[in-house]
Amino acid sequence: MAPISELGIIERALAGAAPASSDYDLNPGIVLPEGRKLRPAAVLMPILETPNGARVILTKRSAMLKHHPGQVAFPGGKVDATDASPEAAALRESHEEIGLDPSQVDILGHLPPHETVTSYTVTPFVGRIRAPFSPVPELGEVAEVFSVPLSFLMTPASYRVERRHWRGVWRSYYVAPYGPYYIWGATARMLKGLADRVAA
Image (cartoon, rainbow, N blue to C red; front, side, top):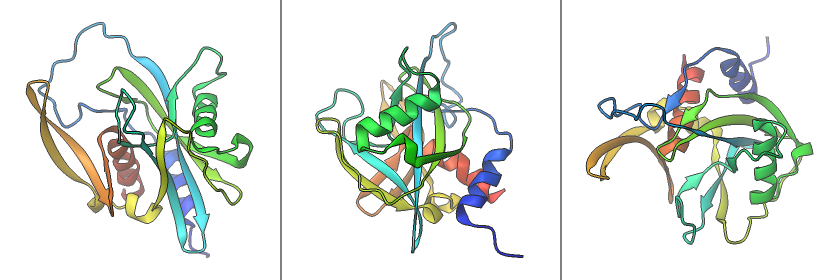
């Protein structure tokens, strides 16, 4: 029997059920306000197969942005009223932010919704890029587009917990540093959730 491919392992992991995640997972003592309203958003975890293994494409947000400047993130954003679905929103945003043609993406599945401290409920979609792809960063929003080996991101040991003082309290979060890139927060939490499912 032929060994299962990297993407085959991802598809198998996505097929199983998993609980929703949150920026608050590592901070159980924080009391969330009752009746809070979360805005829908969607992101894409684009995977590009290369001769040296599959790689995940990520962005580094512009330092000039008001929200999350300089942070590493998946391409994506809020779901607009004109979007047919969260999946459509993730593909639209990926086209706008990194020039990824939606017709060149095969959606393999999605991760459970993730709640952020900025009051969004984010649906992360996982997609395989069909053709060779040269990213075109959106000026003003994306400072850099880079890729990380899927094998690194799907290894639970690549992640550790750090904490910082924010808005008067200590908050813990996952990080997965890779070379000059500091992957942390919601992006690291969503990736860690998938890595745990792959390893299970």
